[in-house]
Length: 442
Ligand code: S3P
Image (tube, rainbow, N blue to C red; front, top):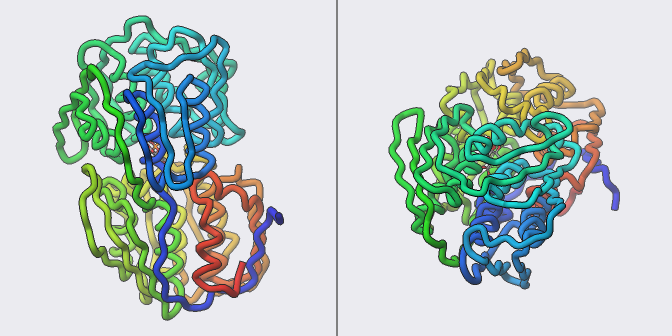
């Protein structure tokens, strides 16, 4: 298979109904929580991507039986802290920050040393953000390079609940501590800046003792150790972060319309919809329903002309944290200057995404002003790219690949986008869905 994607023309108009792959955050959480439940849990529409496979491999190595069937995945949980493994175990989190950080929380009471490794991208990312709170529970960490993978953890014999302030708006940090609380005596108090709340909703659904109070900026969560977690089945909804690429593809293509079925529209994830609507996008939500505390909807998008730049309110940052690259593309095609600030966290992702977003826009002929934590984008509604563009050496960040593909299909130019297999971490059907929209390309 050719590993480079070549795109030499824009996509033709389309009117289609699609489904995107299952939500990544929920898929990984289901795997980790099902591994702590007692009995057989089943998931339908589980995301079958490399990040989720890495999570399944990880719990298998920790002694949990996993069965992948045609229409579902089964996990045979042994209960809380029911892992069973030999010392010297190595768990590979591959590209997944969510897996690497959350699993450390689950290992808070593991008596034998376990080494966590990751790929080149994950090995550059910061782990102090989870190491620090987990040390407070009593875990010990060992590494070559401080706070980076590979690192080893030895859990505490008797972890005790902690007080923890999560100030980055990181759901990974919050969730890692929440998972450690499952194995700790006493109460764990978390004051967390707003971030996606899938872990809280799952804890509630599973009847794990959790109390949550909210103010505008923070959630105050307290958790007590449950006596057990019952096995549970789960139907994973579509991923809004994957849908975002198709929302923007439709907005920026003439005479087009798309209905994306069955997408998770948890309020803590839909910053993308709020931001795009403020910029003039035609988006509506139909058939909204609740599923185990999560909100699910069909999303309808139409070609959106006369887009306007945005002075993006920082309060939306965490609910759009994975969508900024594709939002930057809309800003490039909008009238006026767009401004995004307090987004240094983007440079902590699979690649330094804030820098990459700016770089790709510059290659497209768009002026940007970049700082460590902000970007100004000078939009050009009539932008047409005539020159060749090559996207490479981007640490295989799946979202850099997908943003570049959508840019190529909507702005023209001759694009060579390396490392096509990068999409396998989060959205293996990405190129197939594009092909089915419109058979002429890719
Ligand atoms: C995730 C949280 C976010 C997000 C990541 C998935 C999760 O990371 O970027 O793709 O599932 O908890 P941070 O918690 O580091 O912001």
